[in-house]
Image (cartoon, rainbow, N blue to C red; front, side, top):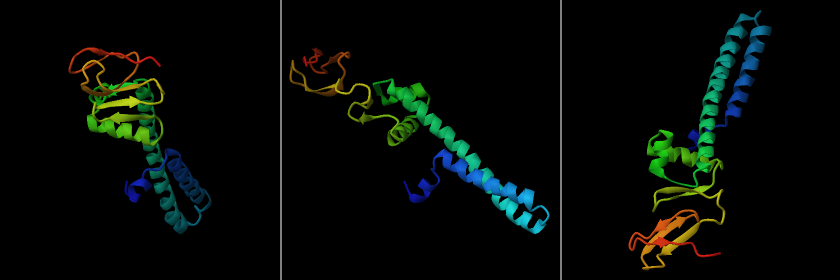
Length: 168
């Protein structure tokens, strides 16, 4: 992300602090400098308008943060989900869903990976050590290359026989 874009992507609390600081001084000028109209006209708008804008930006950023947090909490409950199904379930486009997922991953709200070969998102937090990888089918030797959990049933795309989890 370019540096200018990062500047406009502060946490909501930073916008609230900046806006509150500016509004405090704006109200200070209005209350104590109303006898000096030149200072009031000079200092009032310079603090009150940017303070209001910063608070509005804080509200918008807080809402964005809440959407990412809610999405991350929902995604944690999924274990494994196809990206298209994820987009459909949350009512967004595929691009918007991947962008939201990227934000949640970057913010550390969820741990997981996007398996591009299977086009799935796999949560890593929930099933630490429970997932299994099958490279080749134990029955026919076909290339399966998939991750699965013990309760899932995986079939070989070549021989169509069930692949079982080896005993630990």
